[in-house]
Length: 96
Image (tube, rainbow, N blue to C red; front, side, top):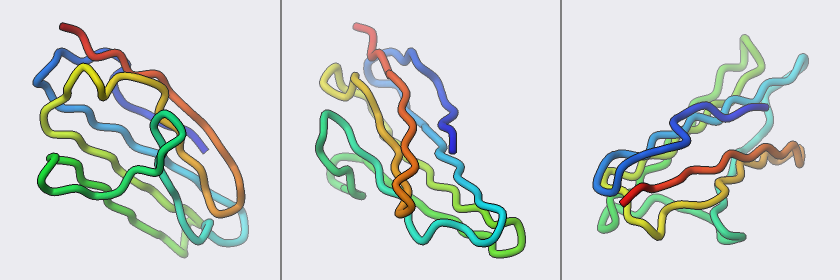
């Protein structure tokens, strides 16, 4: 499991993170995103979208997290956790 994406974004720019988890036998059932201990969900009014893609052939699940216009409060540690309890994180800094 790993996260890719920019660790530094300017306020008003897009935050885009990708979490990729795979298993030798089958992909994890689900992936969740967290920021500051709170579960993140798609919120169109906020400009936040989460998408998930599963490939049975490669045993991979990929989740993308996009925030269209970053606010200073969007900075922090983003955690990606699979249903198998695999966890990884990345720190995103929103610059003023």
